[in-house]
Length: 539
Image (cartoon, rainbow, N blue to C red; front, side, top):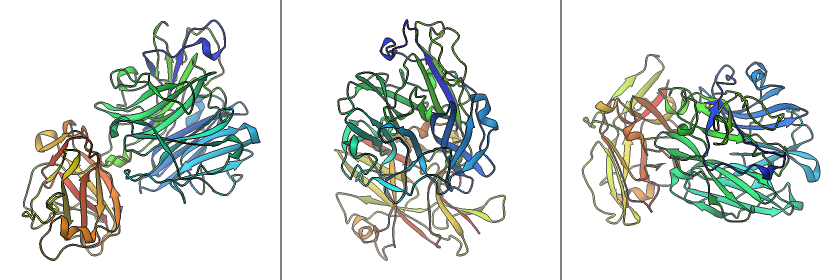
């Protein structure tokens, strides 16, 4: 994906934030790509931005072609047009999905991030441009989410006069909040959180951000998965511990998405930040000059997890202005106020981590196909043996078959599956479970309801009959990935998607199930040499 900047300029007679209400309908104009990643990096993701000493400072997540995560920091720049030419320095150790702000009560900079010793961690510094000046890692949040394959993701911190709040998602349809007295910050929020918004998984997915827009009004945005790509929904509240009311919260009327911006090269408006008018913990934005710095995606890479994301800057105008809101770098030519906000946003590459499984047309399964890529040291094993697991008839055993077939109904999971890949070369290294889909005319693929799944790696395989009862003793290793099949059944073109990496062995045993038991759902894929789950390896 790429980074873009979007700006929304609203007519106003005064400079007060409250003089510009949020529009009921947003329209955005996006910039082009603002920056490219350095060598070896396929995607720039999860940007965080602050103004520091009059210049733009951007931290971002990176994903390499070798599928390793990292963090990059852009040298400060004066204008968004310069972002593509400044140095990009790797931060060591990395901080995934960073969030940067100035904590004014104690006069220090704070960087929060995910996926370290605890779900969320933080570091402090007196100078965010000194990459060697960050403190040692400290615990920010220790809680776990039982119905989530990813756990807590994308920490969003914000404070009022009395408290600091932590908002986050978990790729499971719920949005969570924790809090502490502001005098205790920086510190740990502990392990307890409260669900403040709940919906189906694809509509409350990830990338939450929360902002102050007036004396007693707050704006929350969260990323969703739509039928035409990623988009953002918005909610408002009168206090950070209050109830969030939907504002522009549908795919037809989004806060920002494919349907209300001019960035025709990307179908996704994904992870990003609104440009703040104040870098401190209040996360204050100017509703008279809304600008959105986000990631968009280039045309899909054949391997789904290596989609090149870029940064974009968007600008928005209210509907009563001459043009309407925009996603983009271009500044509005009709605002009443002149602001020192950036006029464009960096374009960076990003890689989506959504995983998806399975696909079309059945073929014999007794002798899985081993295909070799153009490079001599890579190969693929297709067509796993698949077995039904009936959750309410644990001893029911059915013959081996070729398709992926999962069902939820009556508020419970009804049909799960176990599978095994055989004939993985003994000398294989760097093994990854993936799934492929051929052209639409060459596949049989049905996804109804919520297609988010969980794939768990099994420690072994039954010697006799394969059923739920015989598989349970081997379900001890844990999650391999969470492939998302929703909407992919109607997608055109051939694609490949990553599920997760695993220690190489001559056989891979796994279990797959639908995630959302509260929604009646069906997933069916025929599998052959072009479609379905496969193991990718190198030698």
